[in-house]
Image 1 (cartoon, rainbow, N blue to C red):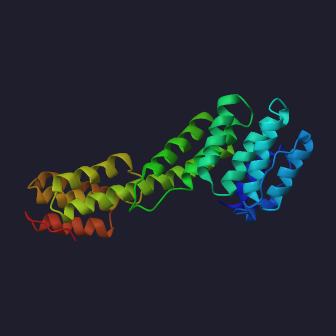
Image 2: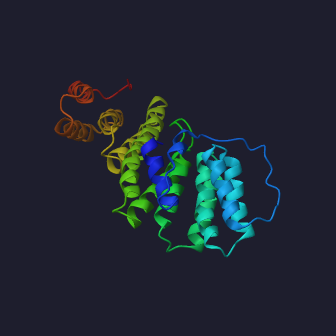
Length: 264
């Protein structure tokens, strides 16, 4: 996450306080215990804040949790809930960041910081996205959470960033579909491959994978003996992506009148 976005997050949670030092914080030592010591809420919150500023995000999160535990009815407790979630996020403990953000929303659904809580949930899923060779369930959860931010708060800076990330998520999911489709092609499972490539064209048409998906559909259609479909996909490819290597390959492939096609 960029320094700009982090600064926006901290402004939203700290009611205008500056958190410039957080951009460099990636975690902290979790070796210090949080022993129960009854303290007034201002002192306890200030200590949690100090730990966060120092980069000890794990201890800061525990201290923010302690603010809520010792002073559950204080206005500081509500703020501490969200700051705990933020601290866990900076510490890369994304599951706890999600849990605390969701808990905040369940208790304070109409709070003015709700947009930030939704955004923090989305970011926590987004940061866990793995490469296309692995299961993409987290990627799908990130997509759902980012869409929720955009749907609920379309005019906010959180939604603007969510829309940018949604484009990247879509490209990632399309890449996974392409990987599976190419695997099916190599295995000679042309129909299964075509279904994956068609999903890319229909569900992720604005991604960078669409030209190749159209070429692969041309390839698969010829292998299945459906030349008319192959011509159709090649024509769509030429109309939308002329001059690309994928159109040139599709044009040559259809022109060869090949019935047996080996994927390149």
